[in-house]
Length: 173
Image 1 (tube, rainbow, N blue to C red):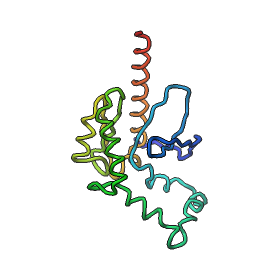
Image 2: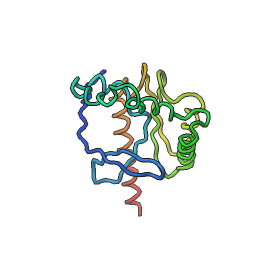
Image 3: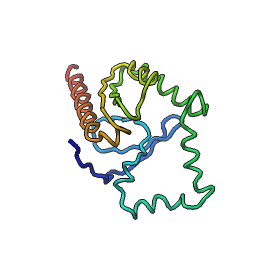
Image 4: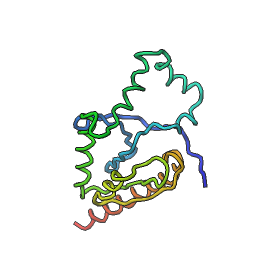
């Protein structure tokens, strides 16, 4: 069943330095923080839901040929393949190696059975991470677009489980 999801972003976006990178985040409660790490957050979903006036504001800096379009060229070149670019590859490698040894952190792996998602050796590497639950979604192209309600329900259930386990652990002492 397809459900409508609002494209409104009702949160205040914050940024923090994390080692050698910057992380954007929202803080929506006074509870202990939970960090969700995801794939590329840009997809065609926002373009299908943005009013024309908002699209124009976003596109304005890229209208002139040349330097103004440089970010659209540079960003895809930062995706690590076969050890390149070295700085991005090193950052991804450190982070993934850390996750492989992070038994103290609960994790939720959202697996895309079809379409675009983590596949092959990368999927099997992620599946081997400790203290992790996996859900699989059947998508057609890009699961954040095809399955947003299912992802939201999985994340909400995961958060509830983690908080429940933390609460039980706190009362055990």
